[in-house]
Length: 396
Image (cartoon, rainbow, N blue to C red; front, side):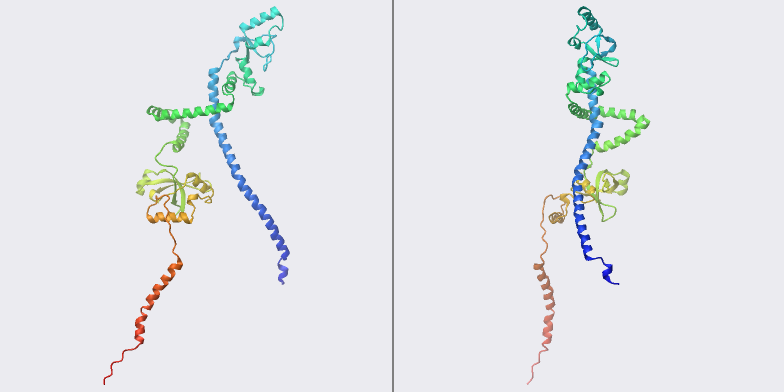
């Protein structure tokens, strides 16, 4: 069979290669654009998500509590039974004629209408004595008008307490943002003084009594509370173990090194059986370092790494692509670390030792000349032997 019939024409191959070269740059540009745009987008999404959680579970409840406390002490509403509805009074802004007058002033307005005729009672005369009904309570018209100016009718509270909570925001803080900022500051101050109180002897005694006397006896709450308390104690209690330590251990076998986080000391029975101190280490998995395996490893087999927790997380998330700058294997850093090991001091910081490799041009002739001299030495007696034995003297 002729080979020309089985192979595609050269022009077709060139066309395919040119089309592939045209498509490859476009695909490369798309991937590069995606790689550049995704980090800020994902960062923004995560920040918004965290901010939403903080706002829903911390800021909003605190703000509502502050608003309720202010409304409770500034509430000037009265029972609705103390007021009556008077006919032929002028309409008011935001509530029209849906307002009440106290029984005492209602008689005065009725007397003015009888003496002066209909329309004698003006709007300015009624404003100071008008009360707007809210269920079984009534609030002053001035308070109602101040709230009605700022919110829509569909969002108007249906209770007197709700109206004064809105009034606390507008009258005392001008905006909800200012109120939220004050609420967060008050929360931080309250947590600080609560921590000081619990740290004291009487405070810790009261907390223990409350946990063991009340929470521990509740069937469902006791299990949930104990688990949550262990997690919070793990993150917030002061301990002697530094949880920011990043170490390297030989796992899963000798010769293979894995990165780990020291979480604390191991259990007592493990330590006694091993015969030396053990530490609990979390071996993270890539690309999700929040999960992994918990190991109890002897302290003597743990190597501390000069990297931060953030850098270790980046190393795991990137599957080893993002290496910290101080841990990259370069000639300078390698010589520096080797110098430390040779001097026997691994704690020398910034001490540089210049280890110059041997130059082949200077040492090669020296190495070659030494065996040459050794080989020529045994040749000396051989040259003597070739001369032959000395002729004895001839006797005359």
